Image (tube, rainbow, N blue to C red):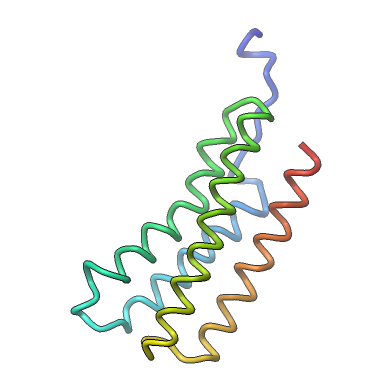
Length: 121
């Protein structure tokens, strides 16, 4: 297929990418309050995981729809992984239940929107 004819998604215009960026921003704000001795443990894991969400959307947006769907799967997987890690962090008292609930709502909204978008590809 001629590369100019292949349909591309401008990831910066995608609501799911923008929500992913918002989640990263929120996560980094939360991580600033984590204990310093978690820097190479849970903090590092959570940070990489959150960054993976919008990054995979951006990377996949230049691919065919079938391949893009695979990158969206990876992004979704990272969002579920992030949610789990934040639950662990809350159980370790690194964040409050209110903070967890607030970010969880955003993550779940991202998951719903992404699955809906995927179904339309």
